[in-house]
Length: 96
Image: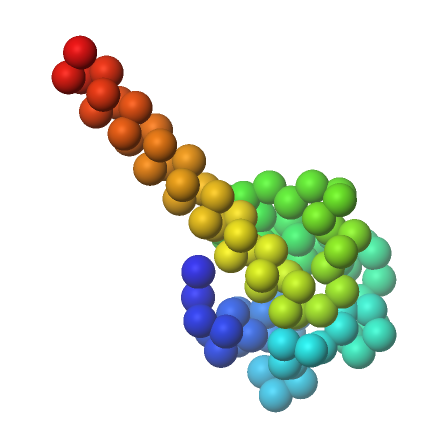
């Protein structure tokens, strides 16, 4: 996962906004005026970039950039843990 500053820069490019307009407390709907379709597009782009899946339950809780960043970090950590378990399982199977 990128640092917070890099995450904000990446989102500013994605949203075509100056990075100075964004902070962790920036709200998608209230501050940026994003409508549902734009949020779906942003989420789709992030899913592609980070190779994760964001379900509707998670999507509805994303009101600020901080919420999004925390959720992406959690998804990334879950993915890394899954890969670690898979690797350990493969090692165990090879030994047997």
